[in-house]
Structure formats: structure tokens, C-alpha cells
Length: 251
Length: 293
Image (cartoon, rainbow over all chains, first blue to last red; front, side, top):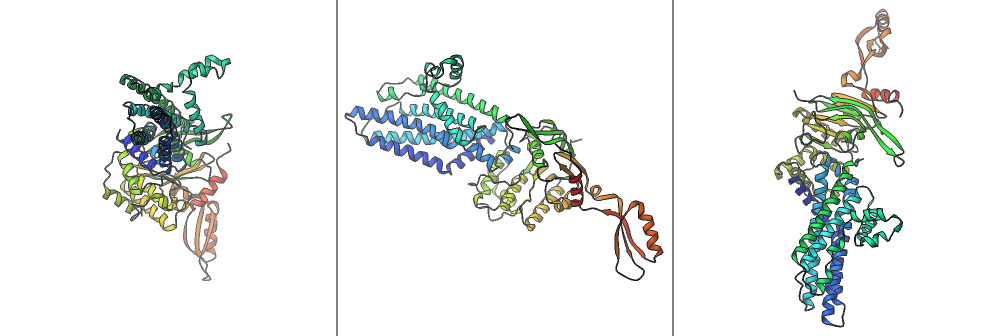
């Protein structure tokens, strides 16, 4: 475990020294500040608008962070050959993947929390109350981001970074669809489409911006179950990624 | 009795081509072994399969056939990896780190003590003294190679695998690398050295394996490889006082030649089997051997 944690720290340092993360955080903060400036016809409407669009912005941030942080990690390690001494000596492939994932997940989590604090600040500056479920809602989006991170790692082991981004966005979009909507894309192969859809998570469980914006309390047990669901899917996706990575020749 | 540092038996590696419809054979039926405390030179022209073999030995590539044992265990075994040091060819590395950061992280991943003094003295040993706090992105190719060497030596390995460690280095740096290889060997480490620099291999290796088109075409102890069975070198001084003459004579004609020299009044200075250079051995092995794909 020490090796994984050390490697995760190495990953965090490396990611924080790249411009990508700071660019994404800047975009999230600017978007939040922009939301605070949008005028609305009534006070409760503006508060709802800030919460809804703020959480939507954070969800997009989670997607951007997953792609921006992780799509280049493995290709870069191969290109600069850092992976050779790493895998030849101190790390197994499982530890490599876990360390890289953990490092990227922590950086992505920190960026999301900064975004959440920004959203709270915008609400406070506009004189609105901060909904009690705002932080748990952000944490759910973070879990969604971790799943997307695992998806990005999975694709990075067998595609190039330019292909990784659209494939991840496609998974993101498909995972928002209901089974009926997804089957409707290709009605001729409904059995296959239904099976494919069942393999992917229902990301709508992570989206609770509507109830929060309307002041409806979301029970804690919902947050816990949804987080567990997302973590289980992330573990599943990482296992699939590992199965692919284990078979890869590092030429 | 402890197992040998390296045993490769019938190794083959095919790379799929054209979406898996055909394949390219990089290494075929390769068998070799190295004894404890030995420096083994691994030679071959470009594309002979040296790097592929090394990557199979390190578990970076999956062999298509055959077996590899490091100290009697498969390459992936953790107890083996702890005893291994690796210097890759042309490393680039994560360039936002300093050598000290890199060494510290590798030490912790290996479960070693990451004391600053040890790391500084290691960097001093490989010629990176004073550069410990500089980011690797400003390093030259030679400095990155030195960094690789420091990473490989960090765990005081029993087996050091080096893939073209001195490629692109200046003569002074090559000499320093050679000295470190010899020091490590004197400490008891076995060294698997893949190199294009035949003079380097000739100077430090106990044994050599020559690879051509994925096959071993010549191997043996260095002195056996360089010795010829059927050619002799004869040095003699003519009776008229002219300068010494050195001639290469086939074994079958040696006695006749010696008789001729004596009859002419010449004085025989030295007779012995002629030693080849490693370059001659290499060229003859790689031109004649190997077979096709």
C-alpha cells in the first residue's frame, strides 16, 4: 500500500505541475462567477438558477477534469519511458493503475471542492442561503467524476488521447439516457442495446440539482446509496481497465 | 544452491501486424543463461531483437513462447524485482521532477530508506553532484542516462540489466559508466549489458551473446570468442636485420612457414593463436548467421 500511496503522491505532484488542472479550475471559477452575474426576475428564481447552473457547471467540471487529467497520463508515461523503470522494478501493473488513479482522483476531488466553495461564495455574495445538501451533492458529482476517470483510464490503454475524449463524452452522454431512450437509438437491436445500457451506470442518480434548487431535503441514505453505487461502478470500470492493461505489451 | 540470475529457454516474441492478420517475429528460439557474478554482453545489429528480449526479461512484454527465470522465479515475482536494477535505452522521464524527488519516490516505492545523504552520495557517484535540485527537463541526454543509472543502483541490485546504457555519451562519460559497471561487478552484482559499443563489451564482459534476426548466432566466454583455432600469428626478424615481420598463417601451413623462416636465417620471435577483435567476431557472426524470418 505504501508503494501505491507514494505513486499517488507522485501523480498528484506531477498533475499539479501541469497547466491543464489550473486551466480547468480557472474555467470552473469563471463560470461560477458568471452565473452569479445573471439577473433574474425574482429573488427565489435567481437562487434556484445559481444552484442549478452551479451544480451543472460542477458536473461539466468533473467531466473536463477526468479527460484533462487522465487521458494523457499513460500515453505520456510510455512516450517518455518513465513506465519502463517503474514497471520493471518497484511497481506491479495493479499498483501502477491504482497509484495513477488515486493521484488523479484526489486532484480532481480537490478541484471539485474548490468549485463547491466557489459556488457557496457566489450564493453568499448574492445574499442567498447555502442549501444544506450542496456539499453532499458536490460529493456525488465527484463520485461521478471518479467513474469518468476510470473510463478515461480504460480508454487510454487502447486508444490515443484524441480518441479518448470523444469516447468518454459518449459514455457520459449514454449514461444519462434511460434504457428506453438508449434502445430507441437502434430499435432493430433492442436486446443488444438493452444489455449495453445495463453495463453502464445510470448517472441520473448523481443529479439532485432540481430538488436542492427547490429547497427539497434529500435524505442522507440516498447520498450514501448513490455514492456506493458510483464507487462500485468505478471499481468495476477500473477492473476492466486493469484486465486490458495487464495484456498490453509495453513496446 | 542458488539459482542462476537469468535463464531464458526457447524464447520467442511475435508482434501482430495488419490487425492481427499477420505477425512479425522479433525473437525466436532464444536460449541463454548467465552465471552469478558475471557480466554478459548482449550484442546484435539494429533490429536483432535485443530490446525485445530485455523487455521480455523484465516482464514488460509477454513472450509468445518459451520461459524466463530470474533467480529461479518468473520476472513478475516481487522477490525478484527487489533484486533487479534496470537502465533503459534513451530514458526521458517525467521532467517536472528533480533527481532528488525522483530518487526519493522510487526509494519509498521500493520500501527503502530515502535518506537525503544516501541519495546525494548516489547522485555524486553517477556524476550528478550539484544537480540534485534541478528539474530533469533541463538535463541533457547524458545526464538523463546518469539519472537512470542512479535509479538502477539505488536498491544495491544483484542483477543489473542495461539496454544501451552509454548510447550517445561522450568518451569520458562512457569510461565512468564502465568503471561503475566494474565496481558493481566487484561488489558481486551480475550485469546484463546490451550495447552497440563493441570495445566497451570487449573491455568489461566475461561472456557475450551475439544475436542476429532474433536468434543467437554466437555465444561464449570472451576469450573463447576472440581466439581462433585455425589461424596463427607469427612474428619474426629477417636475417638481413630488416624490421620485424608479423604474418597470419593458417594452422595447416604453420610448420612449413616456421621451417622456411629458420632456413632463411630469420629469427622467430613469437608464435601463437591469433586473437580476433570483437568487431571481427561480430561481423562474421552477423553476416553469416541468423537465418531468415
